Amino acid sequence: MVFGLGLFSLIFIGLNAVNLVDEAAVVKQERIASRKLEQAVSNIPEQQRSATVWDDAVRKTMERDKVWMNANLGGWMQEYFGHDENYVLDKENKPIFASAFGEVWSTEIYEARAQTIRPLVEEIREAIFQARKKQEDIVSILSEVEAWDVFDLKDQLAIVSVVPIVPDTENEFQNYGAENLHVAVRYVDDELANEISSPIELEKAAFRDTDSSLMAARVPLMDRSGNVITWLSWTPDLPGTDLAHKLLPVLLLTASALISLIVWVTFHLMRVSDKLQMSEAKALSTIKMLEEARDDAKVADLAKINFLSVVSHELRTPLTVILGYARLGAHLKQMPPARKLAHVLESDNVCLDDVKNVADEIMDSSVSGMVKIEKSGEHLLFLVNQLLDYARIETGRLEIEPEVCDITYVVAPVVEQMRVLTEEKGLALNTELNSAMVYADVVRTRQIVINLLGNAIKFTEKGGVSLSIKEKIDVIEIVIQDSGIGIESKDLERVFKAFYQTDSSSSRNVEGVGLGLSIAKELANLEGGDITVSSEVGVGSTFTLTLEKA
Image 1: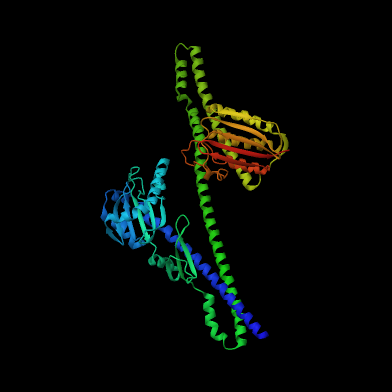
Image 2: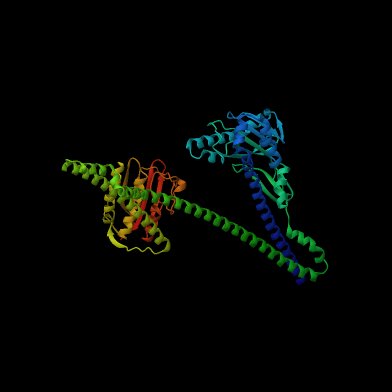
């Protein structure tokens, strides 16, 4: 009795372990197969772009060169990528070339597909229209435009992808609205199933319309709306079952051998299952870490390049002014006013009024140059101070000295200082200064407000800027609003990053190295506060500085 119960328990445990290993293997196969299926679908637009983002493609399709189109957009697509049907549509969305199974066909065969494919074609046309409206790097934008979906073409399930035919350089001119389109049709058939299953060794893989219970392993092929169109199913590899079948003759020899062997197999299979899961988890974690490291390295390289470019530009401008006026001073005698003074002094009848007028002219010119040199020097000093502050923050050497103070005492001088800048640009500066006690570093808080106000004024060309102080339960809010160009939603999370600028080109219209908002954010955090931002493009931005109440 005891032996029977023990044997039954061991058999049950062994079968359960076999099932666990099989389930883990099936889950892994389904996960890998799903990735391969997604990759096969997403690769179709990329395969098309190998021949559609090309100056020759634009020119030859405009010329309706069917020999060229068959060699590059028809037969070639079928031979190398397995596209069963390929079409080229003109600007009116009419077919000018048709290829099926690597051979040129009459364009009339497209009519049977046109109604089904029309939504993708219209989506591409709309994307092209929106890209043309932006008028910024159109060639690069259009080279990424794509639309795909899975359709039942009545006689065949197929993956349909549409991309525009666009130039790869600016050497090939293309009129707006004249883009031809390339349509690729890849049948969902045994050939596609074999292409997906062969690299990962799936047995008897095929697409089936129903969720067959005979197939234990399967992944869905879905359209863009998430609807299941069909299933890629196969006979799964069951390592646990295979191992149990191999051991079965041995297990039947004797009861004692069976018990010992089942115990060994049970623990062995469970260890194998754990190792498989641990190996997979470790591999996925390693891949994720490598991808994050790669992305961080790219971002760091780009930030370094942008920083060097922007700092070089910002330093060059004031240095050019300083050097220019220094050279003028070195050749003061060659300047027209100096020559005029020399001429007056050399004349026989020296008029003191003439001498005084010429001397005043020389003095005014010199003072003007000195003022410009002074302003350029102040700008250089400001840039250097920003870089030094950033370095202190990064190394943790920047210390704050908070004290209890009235927020109006902190903000009012800054408002008057910045009012000069708004008056120069013809902007209104509205304030609502309410007295409230805060616990803050006066100097650093003023620096924060200067950076926020300066940023608002810099990016506002008309309208005005406002600053208001609002008292909450536990905090004081300093709200700075502007009617400037606004910030796109994708840039909101990055505006506080060091050296980040929405326009980092050397021809940008505003000054700065991209440290003002970053330093302001860090200083606010050091004071136990924070800065948040909300914005709408074309309407303006709102920055809110939050400080602790005293």
